[in-house]
Image (tube, rainbow, N blue to C red):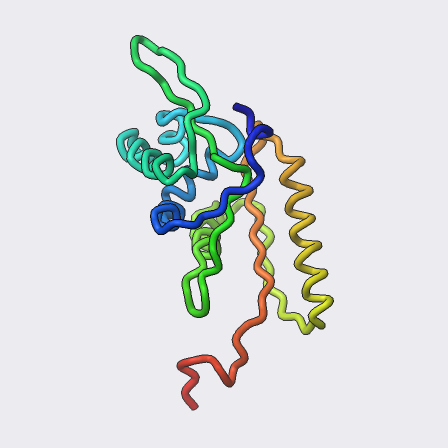
Length: 179
């Protein structure tokens, strides 16, 4: 099943699904499966896991409906399963006020694990925008991410794009600001 045939989005709605995507190892497994199907052995090699650990995490993702078997083949009498993402993108529920943002935590972990001698573009900008400008910038960032996702070639090395556009808590309201 090529990734072109996948549904556009999968909405995480259950606690089981949220627990499945909240784990960094499973996040990295889903990244392997984002563009092309892979076997447990291929996943284990790409993520740096033992096959047993890879199998355990894939089974949890499959049980949660986040990955699916897209084809099988017999290899020396054993059925080899190829897994793929259940959708092109995963939509997580809003973490709520003060809740952990799973995507940002995974992004930071991936950034920290990336080679320090490789090319990276990391920037934080503090902006003052009208609500209209804020909405326009959010839409432009999303469109840019979608445009480059369409250009993605599975034969090329992975690149991650993460962005967060948000209104921070005003200083006078943040907890722990002792004077």
